[in-house]
Image 1 (cartoon, rainbow, N blue to C red):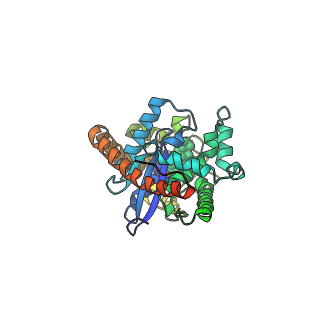
Image 2 (image 1 turned 90 degrees about the vertical axis):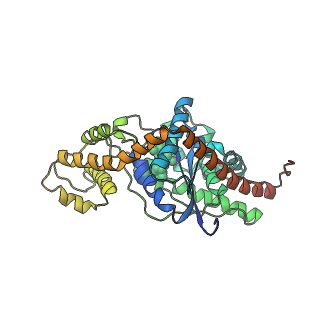
Image 3 (image 1 turned 120 degrees about the vertical axis):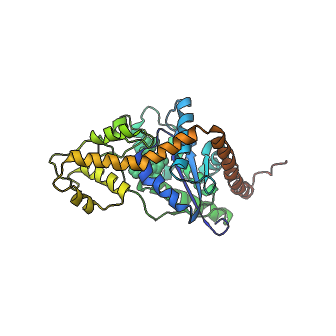
Length: 334
Ligand code: AQP
């Protein structure tokens, strides 16, 4: 709690350009949480280096993620929006929490198994201890709630276990975080392979709509989306391509799948795909325009980055001081 408000923490990795999946599953809803919570939104650039990153690309992606947060409606005066790498307490607390986490626990993490299979040539220790850094992210800000998709639930449970274990030894140090149970967006799939989630590190850019794609690119990608045999617009597991497009359309318009089926009854896939493209454009065009405006105002964005990092550091250091003291590290002489 901070001044009577519950604290919420969330983050996105800067491993690539943000996708419509990131927007629907997270960003679109984040803006609405500001009224109810004191929100910390991090650009998880430390997490991003579990996969090799080109330095210039990482720097650009991280800044783009931060500006996309703002362009999507997160007010940087009301939300703390910052780079994880600007707050060294994340890495410091992660080390301490490593010593309160068991190998057996980390061995059970399904994301580690999936990611090691995907990056067999680079199964580094960071990939293994990733959930501990995530626990540090959350516990540093004494977050009450964390909006997580199903794929991150296991990591959040681990963060809770680590907090409880630490508190058991040292008293009430960390708030034990709960998953945010409010509205979550649909899981958006790749336009080229609807059995896979739309993912910013996907090597096929046609499978992803990027939040910053221009109007024509979005229309082209929607029109080229893989569809299924038949010609009816039906929300069915037998039609994963069309089902995914319906999920996208409902996320953009607020309509239900039944309403969409009715709207396109007797109409072909072509007409439906055009409507999906237009709906996506009408939502994302203003975001891109705002991003472009921010890109031209370097001084304004730099000032926000500085101010928000200071706020993040203030709260993170507060927790870290408490943790250092509890563990028994000698006090820093200033
Ligand atoms: N396809 C998706 N549909 C709905 N929600 C999604 N999210 C990601 N993809 C979809 C949500 O976006 C938030 C940020 O995710 P992240 O950057 O921490 O990592 P991720 O979930 O692993 O996303 P990506 O795009 O697939 O990243 P890479 O390719 O780097 O692994 C989360 O809230 C997530 O649920």
